[in-house]
Structure formats: C-alpha cells, structure tokens
Length: 378
Image 1 (cartoon, rainbow, N blue to C red):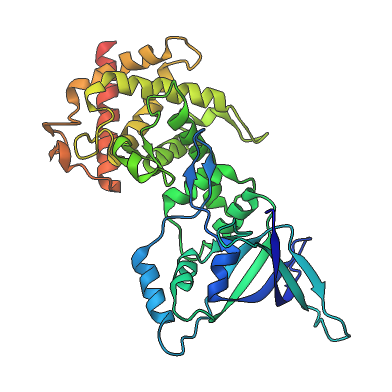
Image 2 (image 1 turned 135 degrees about the vertical axis):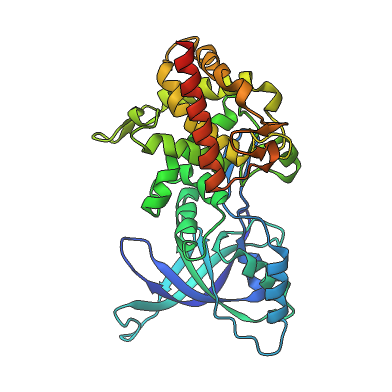
C-alpha cells in the first residue's frame, strides 16, 4: 500500500502457545469491508491454486442480513481474520493490564487511504457473515473479531480448514486445499492429501487423458460445461488403491521411510486411464447424463478394476498404455456406458447411481468379467 492510515482498536492479546499471538477486538459492521477481504478459491493462468474460500451463498447471506437489520440484534458470532505482519501492538500501562491469560492494549491495523485500495486482512472464517455485515443498515453494530498474524497463504489455508471442522466444508473444497498446506489438520484429511495432489497432476499434465476435464472447487462457472469428472470420485478411487494392501498403487509407498514414488504412481495412472480413454473413447469426456463412465459410479468401479489390470502391466514400459488397453478390450463387449443395459446387474445403462451398492455391484461385475475373460484367453 502506498498511502496508509491506521485503524486503532482496544484489544486483548492472548498467547496460546508458540510465538503467534491472538488478538481479540471489535470492529463496526461498516469497517469490516475496509479491513478484510475474502480470498475466493480459483486458479490463475498458470493453473496455480489461489484463495481458499467457497462461493457466496446468497440465501444464507440474505437471512443473516435480515436479522442484522432487525431491532436490537444480538450477534455474538464473530469473525476470524488473518492479519498482515504490519499490525502494531501497544500494551496498556499499569499493574492490572494482564490477568495471566490475556494482556490489554491497543491494536493498530494499516488500511489503505483509498477506499478502493487492497484490504490488509483476509477472512478465514465468517465470509457469509461478513457479506451480510457489509450490507446491513445497522452500520455501527459492534462485531467481535479474533485475529492472528498470518504472513503466508499456506498458514491461512491451514487455519481455514481447522476452524471449519465443526461445520464440515464441501468435500471438493477441502480436498483441493489439502495439497497446498504442510500441516494437515486431521488424520482423516491427511489420507486425501496425496490423492488430491495426484488429481491436480492428472488435471494439468499434458499426457493425462483427464487434462482439463476434472471439476474442482476452483473451476470457474464458465468452465463447468467442459469438465466431466468430479474430483471427489477420482480422489477416492486413487485413495483406495494407495491405502489398500491389495491396491496396485500401494507398493509405491514406503511405510518405513515415509516416502512415496509419485513418479511411478503418475506413470501407472496415466497408462491405465489413458487406456480407458482409448478403449472407451466414445464414452469419454461426456456429461455423466450421457456416459456412466464419467459418472462417479464409473470412475470408482474402473478405479477398482485398475488394481487387477495394472498388475499385468509395467509402469516403466514405454508401451504401458497400449498394454493396458489390450487388457481392457477383454471387457468391452460386456459394458454399457452410454446405451443398452448391464444385463448381469439387471440395470439400464443410466440406472447406475453413485451409491455404495451400485459401486460395489459394478466393481465386482467388471473384475469378475475381466478375470474370467483373461483366463479364457490363456
């Protein structure tokens, strides 16, 4: 910021551990928009993830605003802000400024002199509330705020995931953010970190059949018509193969050393899914309403078939893709991705749904058929 002015507020400084203080203070509703902005999740031109916040929920915001505009609202639900390193703190003088848990003082936040200038802080939690506060007629409503200094976007994302564990975030948003942070908030989230990073790779790698067709939380509205696979189904398919001892991707992880051969996994995924693309080309890159291969049930079932097919294909073979395709041709005549019916399942092609029962039934059918056809071929 070229020109700055300082917003001064009485505050409490709380040290919960380490050297990262937490500041508790109050802003007027009209000041929120001057101090903080929302980091919307998206991708830049190079495909790098930017931001972390989900889109605005207009109905939710309107409901909050209607309450804020009512007579005598009580609004204890505060905001959590990531503050810039430039904030200044001055402790109050006197013997009773601390009770052993918090210190009273003054917090000074730098804001741009130009109202259209960049905001110094980012909203980590409370974006829907902040939008309602910015629009309420009750401009001087005091709003409780908790702020911490976050010099990096990674730290903001980590805290964003942590504070949103009570009311779960959309799965797609969580999984897309996970590869961007070092300290994963929970063991459950950690299991999706590597698969999510691999899905990022598949969506951007020029050798991948999935390039540009995976729908993620950051996918722009205008691009959704050209994305056909939801990231959550593909992430789950990869996660199963990595974590299950019978999965073809399991051996690429060295549990003892904590290392992973990500390049080997990349080669296997591109070879297998490239073969799926080649063998079932007419069913590839179509909306799920037109192709159950692109539907969650198809991705999950074909992911489980990968564990059988790729045991017969070396990922370092230059012809791995064509070798995998030769294996998949064994099941072509038994598949009904875009028309007809799955006779053995008693279902029309478009009756398959992304439910555990249908995923299991289709997976078992494909694996049984593949093994039977392979035995017959021998």
